[in-house]
Each structure stands twice: as structure tokens, then as C-alpha cells.
Length: 579
Image (cartoon, rainbow, N blue to C red; front, side, top):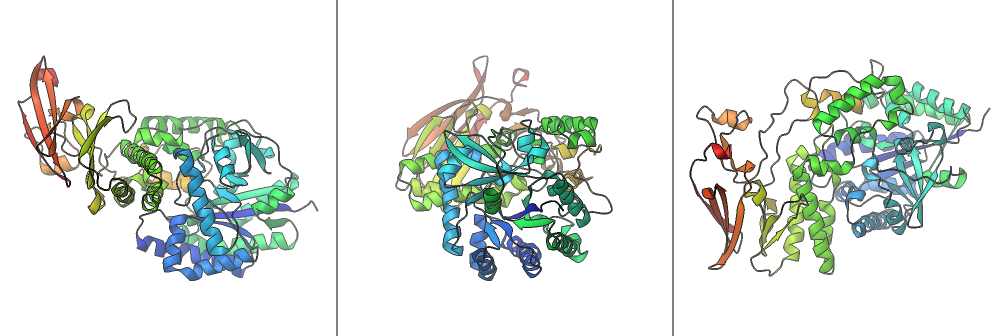
């Protein structure tokens, strides 16, 4: 009999900052508690567990017994806990000091609550950039868990990826563990016998290690999975099947730390900027995403699953900040406040609020809501308001002319101790942010309804992650199900506060609500010339649009201390020259 293959089984448990208490409670009852209880009862140990900071804080207040159980298992060496950024940020999208700080917060929280160290890191959404290695090493991280796709995109053969590798940046090193994509698609979407078959095949090849690490919400939280995993018996069958493999010496359950000590690393690896396959596709604009899907179909399932498939890639995670200006505004506001907080000596209230505003979920959109969920965006702006209020204590009304969102066009940023407003002269003088600190609300927190890839009719797919009658919907299948019959409407132009437009007489309120109109004229298409004047204790911000030197549209905002403002608009109906 060949040597047993070491098998790391890892799950990542997360709920975002600002999610509803009912969602936390439902996932605890439907996923987190039953999963841990079954694994513990059946002796399927050791396992690796990552509990995100927002979930950890919620559990501490609402379900400390669950954390006590995790702590007992961790103390006995039956659970290895992973760190990450405390509030589950995309680390690559943060200022470098913030990255190190976020990881330190969660490592400290784990040590304080469970009395154990967290030597490894669950990389949020597996978004990797090469410079992360140095920052993670500085944060005390010994190893990072990534998709095998990151390696395959660099040309590594798949058969070389069943062991740890080592990377470095600026001379600081961390180990890397590739996640087996096939296991990620098999578990829990396919019968356990197929998992056993895959592990036996790897062992027969002489592979020393197999790694599964993925979202714990797959085990009962995703649509259709609770019935499949618990009621239909998938988890019990899986534990029985894997138990037989461990009992007869074919599989040895292990942790990342044990594997790092026991399995010889493959050598040096420099990985590209990457994430998992689906994330890279979601980051594309809709037309490009459809072209990528067509290329995948053309390549075919077999070739897509092979080495050629890894070379067919989507976009960088940061492209979400291009695709969704609303996400970019949150991100750039966060970065600006983080820099201001550092300059102010990092007051704790502001620093923690900025950290919570860095939670990733509201900054992107894939299969699930993400950016489209207003309560998640509200949470980001809520915490940014807390931070900015702390940092602007006693500040008088003032303004700045700067390119805050880094898009090449300058904005006007008005603020005092009670509010913050961002006006965009290049986009019709609209108000793109209006946050009142005591209210903890950005009243401009709206989202333009855009054309997404799922607005197109399904055309089939070559993705290997699909299921049939022997399985349950996988992430790829859920992605296809987004292409539903009743699709969200699409706005004809970007949303913001006080965007003036002229509409035809035939446009009624329902047509306007669903975006079913073409404006005769809209200020959004007009770059306006701004002028700011301080007078009588307030700021008057005027915008004008001229054609052939003749003003045809003008508006003025007057901002007063204490977050009060009003607007007046004057102009004539634009002629053909402005259409």
C-alpha cells in the first residue's frame, strides 16, 4: 500500500460587517453549529478553521458556547485556526500599514479568546498580489492558503501543486499552500465517493498532500445546500467515506502547520496577481464577461480543466473599483481617512471604524448581492462617518479641490465637524456623497443599476463546476441561475443627488422608476465650471454650463455649518448645441 496522502480539510466562516443579526443567527443554526458538531462527533479531526472577525465578534456576544467548543478543540490540537484581516478586507486593496494591522488584530483576538497562535492566513477571496508576501511576513504569518489557479496561471504543472511552496518579497518569505480546485468543486457538490476516488488517485501518483479549503457556507448556507448536505445525508456519507479511508491508512488528516513541517516544499514560486476563476470573471465588464464565457465554451470542458484553461483569465479584483464607481468612492474615502487617521496619531475610535469599513463584501458583486445590498454599503458609510467625525472634531466649514476618487477629474470636498460632501463638477455638479456624521448616513448612498453579464440569456457553459442529478448546485450553477427571467432594470445614466434632466411629456413615474426613458437633456453629460465663495458664514458653490460663451444652465449650493444646505437652479432650456 502506498504511503497515506495527507489531507488538509479547511473551512472559512464569515458574515460581513453590517449584515443582519437574523442572517448571523440563521447561519449559526443551519451551518456553523451542526457542521462543527458532526465533525466533532464523528472524529473527523484535525480540521482547519477560519472564523472572520465580524463573525467572531458576533459569536462572542450571541453564542459564546460555540466559541468555547472551538477553543476546546483548538487547545487539544484538533482544530487549527487561521488568521486573516480582522474585518475580512481585501488585503491587496489596503494601504500597507493597514494590511499588517488588520492581520495583527485578528491574531491577537484569536490568542486572547482561544489561547492559541494562528500561524497561517486565509487570504480573503484569495486575492493575491506579489507584494503581499513582505507585509504578511511582517505581520507574523508563516503560510498563506491560495488557489492552485494562481500557480497554474504561472505555468506550474498541476501535478507539482500537492505540496507547499515558498515565495518572498523584499527578502521576507512566506509559505504557500495551493488549494485543489477539483476538491473545491467536488465538496460538497458531488457524492463523497468521487472525493474518495480523487484522493486515491492522488495517492496512487505518489502525491504527498491534498488541500481543500473553501467557504463554510457551502455546507448549508448557499441556496439548495442545506437539504443536500444535512437532510439528504451528504455530510454523514462524507464523514463515513473519509473515516473509512483514514481507518485503513489511505488518508491522514492533518493541519497546514503539520504539513509544512512534514512535506518538503516544492521550491520558490512567484505568483501573479490573481484570484479564483469565478472572481476574475465577475470583475470583468459585462461585454467582456460574455466574451470570456464564449471562449470557455469554445475551449471545451476538457481543455478548460487542463493547463490551457488556467491561461484563460478574467480581470484583476481592483477592476471592481472601475466597474462600480460607487465602490471606488467608498474605497478612496476609506484610504483618505486612513491616511488622515495615521497623521492624527491613530485615535482608536477612528482606527477601528476605518478597519470595519474595509470589510470586502460591499465593494464587489458576483453571484450574491455584495455591492447591490444597500445595508452592506450603509455599513461602510456608517463606519466611515464614525471615523470622520472623530477626525474632524472642532473643524470649521472648509473645502478642498482635489481628485479624491483618482479618476483624473477633480472634485470639491466640503466638510466641517458635522458633515462631508463630495461634488463632481465634471459630472454635472452632482452630489456624490453627503454624509451627516451624527446620523451615520451618507444620503447619496445609491447605486446605479447596470447591465450585468446575467442580463443576457444563458448560452451554456464549459465550466467543470456544474452538477447533475447526482449533486447539488455549485457556484458555477448559481452563477447561471442569476440569468433569470425577471431581471433588474438598467439605469440610463449614473445616479447621484440632484442630477437635473429634461424628460419627454410621455415619461410617467413608473417609467422613470424602472429607467425606461431617454432624457431630452441631462446635466450628467455636461462638465460644469465650479466657483466657490465664502460669504456670511457659509460656502456658496456655483456651477455653470455655457454654449458659445452664453450661460445656458447654472446652479448654486449653499452649505452652512452644521450640515445644512440648500440649492437654487436657474437656466434656459438647452438648445441643440448641448444635446
